[in-house]
Image 1 (tube, protein in one colour):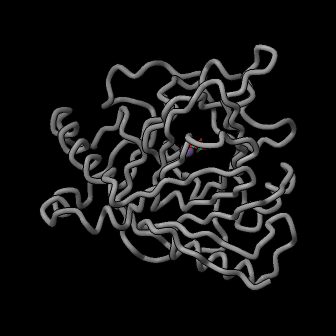
Image 2 (cartoon, rainbow, N blue to C red; image 1 turned 90 degrees about the vertical axis):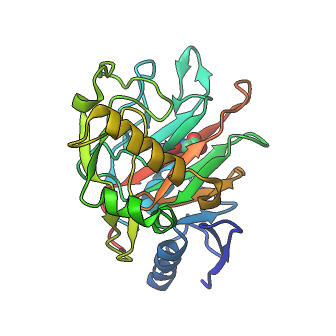
Length: 285
Ligand code: OGA
Ligand code: MN
């Protein structure tokens, strides 16, 4: 299979043409996808047709899978039956039961599950039912965000770590089993460096996780808030981002180490169903 890589007009992202992800992939094709992924950070495969087992099989070509995260209190089930690796992201409610998590509201900028000590290096999202327009998912380039930091700010954040809080989803809702955070200096989560080196490219990336209830270790609360605000205002500038406009059948995979994402709120009366896998380890790079 000869693959074609067509980059987006933004500062990251490329469409991969000539690959049917439901079919077995030759080693050569896989290597070409891996190379494009390192270079473009977000890959989009249009017009795919997958069932959940197929999504799992495709995802496993890149490494072992992590289980679906703990969802918001109101949502009982977030993975598909018998496949704990497949997270359901949906606003659809059937017979009083939500099909999945994250609703129809805005999702703020975040990387997936970075509240874990070893966060997923990548996530893969498959669009099963998507609205004709809206509900765009935005991605940003955190290598670029790091490179464009003023030199003094780069110096100031050297060696600092921040807490990535586990208590809330990117929709801002409390996860099942968690309590509201009243003191961010003691919130549950994991401390990660503000700057990481990507193991595949050896490039430095700003690593922020999510803004809500974040805290920079060793600083006063006021200093931490001010520095986080400054870093977030910079990292979330439009010039580092592009919006993915969904079509049914899209498979979108992103590098969770050097990319953050967010989603626009959308019309609650339309149906949106996406299935996601998240990698536990990435075995290609
Ligand atoms: C996710 C996520 C974005 C979306 O699945 O990790 O953030 O567009 N979803 O629903
Ligand atoms: Mn996410």
